[in-house]
Amino acid sequence: MQLPKGTATEYADVPADAWHYNTIMAAKAAGLLDGLLIEGNNFEPEKPVTREEMAVIMANAAKYSGRQFPVSAGKFDEEYIDATEITEEYRQYV
Image (cartoon, rainbow, N blue to C red):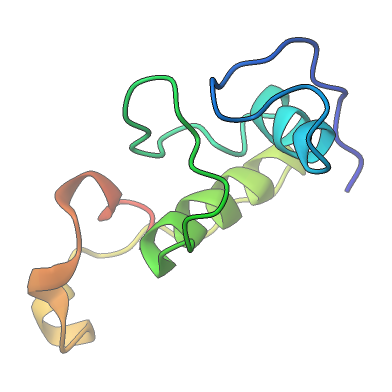
Protein backbone atom coordinates (compact mmCIF):
# COMPACT_ATOMS: atom_id res chain seq x y z
CA MET A 1 0.00 0.00 0.00
CA GLN A 2 1.43 3.35 -1.02
CA LEU A 3 0.90 6.06 1.60
CA PRO A 4 1.10 9.82 1.07
CA LYS A 5 3.88 11.82 2.67
CA GLY A 6 2.98 13.53 5.91
CA THR A 7 3.57 17.24 5.79
CA ALA A 8 3.76 18.58 9.33
CA THR A 9 4.39 17.50 12.87
CA GLU A 10 1.01 16.54 14.25
CA TYR A 11 2.12 15.25 17.64
CA ALA A 12 4.24 16.88 20.33
CA ASP A 13 6.00 13.58 21.11
CA VAL A 14 6.93 12.76 17.48
CA PRO A 15 9.71 15.17 16.55
CA ALA A 16 10.62 15.59 12.89
CA ASP A 17 14.01 13.96 13.44
CA ALA A 18 12.56 10.78 15.04
CA TRP A 19 13.20 7.55 13.11
CA HIS A 20 9.45 6.84 12.94
CA TYR A 21 8.32 10.37 12.05
CA ASN A 22 7.72 9.78 8.31
CA THR A 23 5.81 6.55 8.91
CA ILE A 24 3.54 8.05 11.56
CA MET A 25 2.90 11.19 9.48
CA ALA A 26 2.13 9.08 6.37
CA ALA A 27 -0.31 6.94 8.36
CA LYS A 28 -1.93 10.11 9.71
CA ALA A 29 -2.15 11.70 6.23
CA ALA A 30 -3.75 8.53 4.80
CA GLY A 31 -6.37 8.48 7.56
CA LEU A 32 -5.13 5.22 9.07
CA LEU A 33 -5.12 6.77 12.53
CA ASP A 34 -8.62 8.27 12.28
CA GLY A 35 -10.82 7.09 15.10
CA LEU A 36 -8.01 6.37 17.55
CA LEU A 37 -8.53 7.80 20.99
CA ILE A 38 -5.43 9.99 21.15
CA GLU A 39 -5.30 12.24 24.19
CA GLY A 40 -4.15 15.78 23.65
CA ASN A 41 -1.35 16.25 21.16
CA ASN A 42 0.62 13.12 22.11
CA PHE A 43 0.80 10.03 19.91
CA GLU A 44 2.71 7.95 22.49
CA PRO A 45 4.83 6.05 19.94
CA GLU A 46 6.38 3.79 22.60
CA LYS A 47 2.99 2.64 23.95
CA PRO A 48 1.94 -0.87 22.85
CA VAL A 49 -0.93 -0.93 20.34
CA THR A 50 -4.06 -2.63 21.69
CA ARG A 51 -6.03 -5.05 19.55
CA GLU A 52 -8.87 -2.50 19.48
CA GLU A 53 -6.52 0.13 18.09
CA MET A 54 -5.15 -2.36 15.56
CA ALA A 55 -8.73 -3.11 14.45
CA VAL A 56 -9.24 0.62 13.81
CA ILE A 57 -5.98 0.89 11.85
CA MET A 58 -6.78 -2.22 9.79
CA ALA A 59 -10.30 -1.00 8.99
CA ASN A 60 -8.90 2.38 7.94
CA ALA A 61 -6.21 0.69 5.81
CA ALA A 62 -8.85 -1.42 4.07
CA LYS A 63 -10.93 1.68 3.41
CA TYR A 64 -7.87 3.58 2.13
CA SER A 65 -7.08 0.78 -0.30
CA GLY A 66 -10.66 0.62 -1.57
CA ARG A 67 -11.79 -2.39 0.43
CA GLN A 68 -14.24 -2.71 3.28
CA PHE A 69 -14.38 -5.10 6.20
CA PRO A 70 -17.83 -6.49 6.96
CA VAL A 71 -19.62 -4.54 9.66
CA SER A 72 -20.04 -6.47 12.87
CA ALA A 73 -23.57 -7.61 13.61
CA GLY A 74 -23.08 -6.22 17.09
CA LYS A 75 -23.54 -9.54 18.85
CA PHE A 76 -20.50 -8.94 20.99
CA ASP A 77 -21.73 -11.00 23.93
CA GLU A 78 -22.05 -14.04 21.68
CA GLU A 79 -18.92 -13.49 19.59
CA TYR A 80 -16.36 -12.39 22.19
CA ILE A 81 -15.90 -13.82 25.66
CA ASP A 82 -14.35 -10.51 26.70
CA ALA A 83 -17.05 -8.36 25.11
CA THR A 84 -17.36 -6.15 28.17
CA GLU A 85 -13.72 -5.13 27.68
CA ILE A 86 -14.28 -3.63 24.20
CA THR A 87 -14.23 0.16 24.36
CA GLU A 88 -17.53 1.56 23.11
CA GLU A 89 -15.84 3.88 20.58
CA TYR A 90 -14.05 0.90 19.01
CA ARG A 91 -16.99 -1.53 18.75
CA GLN A 92 -17.77 -0.60 15.15
CA TYR A 93 -14.25 -1.67 14.13
CA VAL A 94 -14.03 -4.96 16.05
